[in-house]
Image (tube, rainbow, N blue to C red; front, side, top):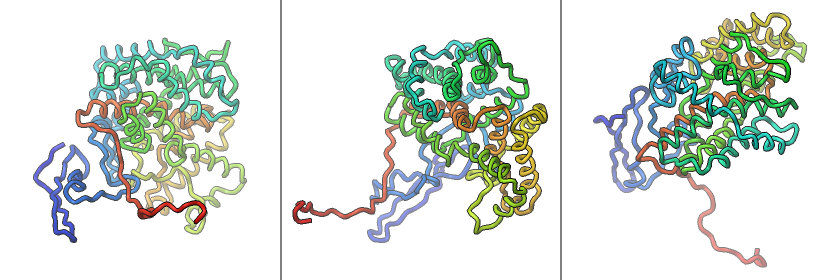
Length: 436
């Protein structure tokens, strides 16, 4: 970050006082006005609901250009990482800032493998949940509960302690996620298999049964690995900002990530791919022709919306959708006609074709986004809708931790404390109850 020579002058018309605010220049993206002197000099706050125009921190981790449809982790375009990297290598990159050499990557993989097991008492912890508890409710609780097992070993001011906590969370998250699924399905828990890589082991823990070892096809492992890479980080979104804000109080990283998982759970954030499958199910079960729903989507007086199209950040094609589209098609081809979800998946592919060719969608840049394809992939693999956001949380764990570690290592860091525009009553006197 550099200050440069550019400034913005703010004048208070009542007092005539002025304040010059420096414009900070990052590596990429728009300039950022440093408003820290605004309250000190003029006594004003800024008003920015949703913080959509406010940079809450300086970060070196992820960059998004929504207008151009660009996403990069530590400077590397997501297209290159998706083509050439793996999720484990991407984790290393996000955590440490550089791609590892072969020895570094092997050491990192072994560290993660050594920490995949979850304390056996956590099995009994799961037994306390209602039989039909939502997997995200279990994940919020289970990740927060990890703080009870490692509270004496975490010093958030110590880089080595922070790194250890990060390794533990990345390692244990697939185990916890799979146990959320197994409990909700009434099936026995599986333990990690250190002979498998990160993604293949997660699928093993999800789908292996006693006496029947599950072996995912290379296409299936690749599809899941891509989903994890593409969801590993996405800059200062709601859940990442939540982790940063919770962590700024020097809370346990397990508590901070539990807060982030709770934020991700919201349908406006992590639940978008669930909405895609619910929409496709509605279309298939209705018996109506797909054109009926396309016409409804075009009708501005109809509240129906096609889920999984367009993106709040990307005003062009979601770069992650371009990447995952091909592996989605490869997986559907491999599964053939025997997949029980075939009608749903065929409807999805027909809808994709319409969206990519219809001028209405092209002009409005309503292209299929990553949630559209990830939802289809999950459905094809056999992952229930209730687990979609859990896997999103699994993927995003490394992003949350990278931001938490960056924030905790900032010497100028301080506890988050947003301001407000108060519009309630002015000060008034208390009235005795017998006079009200």
